Length: 429
Image 1 (tube, rainbow, N blue to C red):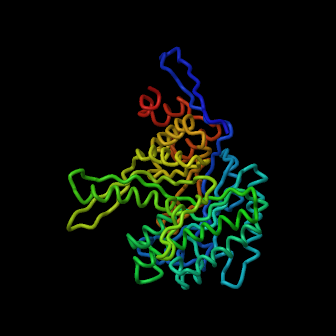
Image 2 (image 1 turned 60 degrees about the vertical axis):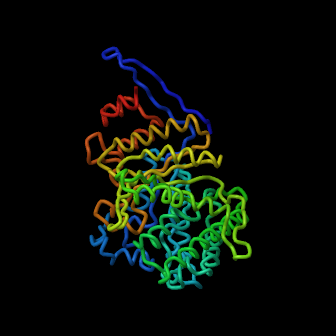
Image 3 (image 1 turned 30 degrees about the horizontal axis):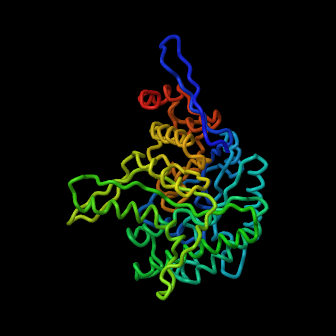
């Protein structure tokens, strides 16, 4: 991959205002994350999905759509994407500890073949908030046996799909899972003793990734394996609130970094408290959700709210550069009606491509893959990016903007001027 991108400058005779086109490297990967189930009705024995259906947080019924994965993949091709993260559903592949669903595995082989025929590079995501009922009932990640259960699953899938996929993601956003399950207690817990279970779950997930990394490389020598994390930049909503200010460095350090630090130092028995390992990941995959504000006080528990900005994106780039490994960013637009957020982030991405030779791709994450979002509203229940080629907003839909950037492999002055004119002075000084 070429490390640098370039800018073409022209001048309009009418305004004499400099115009620029920010080009990305020729082999830059443009992708999206495809959910395990774009339609919620397609799964039944997944405990998180079943829980979400009955959760008071997601009272709206799932909306059925006519879209199919074949049509979605055609849209991906028409959009100009050359990469796609395909999420597998463990509960579908292994309905019981003793039985494998070979038909489901063949179905995933068909999907991967379809993507390769379209010259779309697949990234297989093995685990993202989707576990079988039997796994949860056995104690989920708080049970040490989870490591072996997961190893069996990984070996089965790597054997079946290895010839069709080079890029593997063992877990996605395990820090978000641990944070929301045991600290905020938003998700169902597998045991009553939250703190002890959280410690065991953290260790078991890290060990499970380490073993999965070894299994995949044993079966596929040229495989590229990673663990994907969620990155959030926390800031106090009110500078003068002491508790908010104290919480910030704890959240930023713990939430954003403990997974990769843990892969270097994994807790063992008390006699060997920490054993150092070489980092077991071949590339970096980070989802950035935007900046978060912390609000609370002595009489009010701390709460987290989305600030709608992405100032912390610079810290993501600085952090991942220190690992000196290929890096792919996943971005989510928290305000879909606002194209300025997407444009600003992708412009920052372009600037980073000049300075960071390890940055190799961007994936748009529509935010419907986690069980927490799939039932929240009719819009989120629709198949991913159904509106990508038929935007409901005139010229300003982020999906339409993303399509133009992908197909041109560049951000043009005209695109910014037409869709977000308020950004012209900021992006084209």
